[in-house]
Length: 568
Image 1 (spheres, one colour):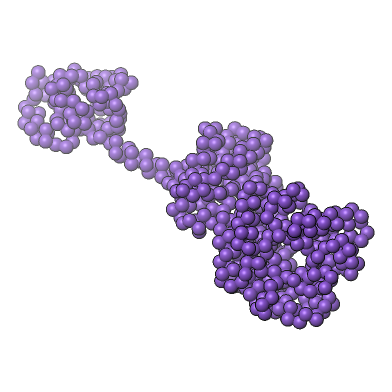
Image 2 (cartoon, rainbow, N blue to C red):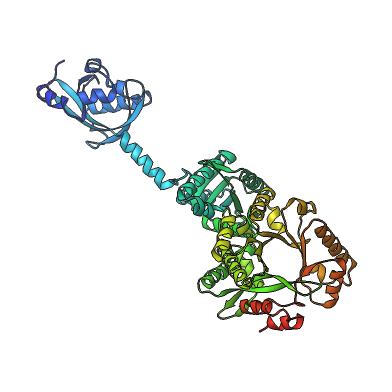
């Protein structure tokens, strides 16, 4: 069968077009294919002419194609008229690819004909897929983004499925950014985005909600024990450093857990519950998990209001350090001070730490205020040691500061800025803070001691540290908590514990400071035990900076005068 005259006239023109053209007779045999069509499907024109059009149609679609062409040949109109249709096509090598085909049919003296223009839409499909991924996935880590994660969670909860939601954020991530730059920070987030799915497997959906916050959905599982097991595995996985660009980056995480439907039957409610639990985990010092409890909701809201006020207080200069003298018990000579934070609230007056520290310790703001505290203490050390003396200033560290990778840098910067000897500064940590990550704590304390800054164990005996920890940690000072001093005259158990701590501290070459001394009788017992130093209201209340400087400038000032100075 030859071409109709119209096709013969157009064949030369069509062969030069970039658009793929093909024409087939009533039996579905290819009678014309231009160069673009041959290149698109991987054939020579001689291979195609006379071949069935089915050669470019995947096997699974051929039945529908034959039926459709039969209807058209019988006089029916094409199902979609002249509109383009997207279908899959088959290349000569057997690979499939997406095309857009626009079909035209006609009859002439030679019978029924079907012609088509074809576009390869592979790039369009890939572009659409990329856009879809961008809409549903985090561009940095490749994990689901917040929108996609929340959509999936909503669908699951709407279907009545039970699930566990785990929220986590990275403790110390801001310091990595500040110390090593945002490129390293992005690399760290990508590494986390690899480690979490690998750890949890296909049964868990992992998403990055934004910043350093990640979410994990355990479908068809609202079992607290299972969720706790997974949280423990995550915490353990974060004990392994991240190796990036030749650096070994230590990173920990805090985790909040919520279970549906008991903690929320809608996505936003369930996420909020997990967030409250995460907030509580961070308040505990991080590197732990907490499961949501209803009481967390109101408590968390109150803390957040207080935190916003504290941020404003720091900005407006409302925070102030007071200094409580530490003395030699036998001579009452002042040998140092403990720096204690106060808040000059514009409406509530002077607030003590107990009024606001619980809120401060539950936020990243603790580090910001903690750095300010170290800097202020060093500035005071420069002022009080101006006469060539060497008074040691003790500063309590927040858990977030202690675990920050730039702690040593911050301390060194403050010492250099105020030009004071490292021995004038002592950093105090509690047992609970150090025990949360023993190995990391050892490294941190060793680095601090290496530059000459003192390290004190605060409130020793009230936590869970073993006595052997005193031997392992590079300490300079042991502070005996006031709870053992209060009834030291009347309770034999308190006296026995204190006596043992004093003797042990002395034998290990540590300085011992007894806290909360309020009476001469308590002082006499401590002196008899051999305790060298102490602090408490017997020697002076916490003093404002100018009063503390005046105190050391007048060595004749004794107990009662110091107590009065602290109230003025």
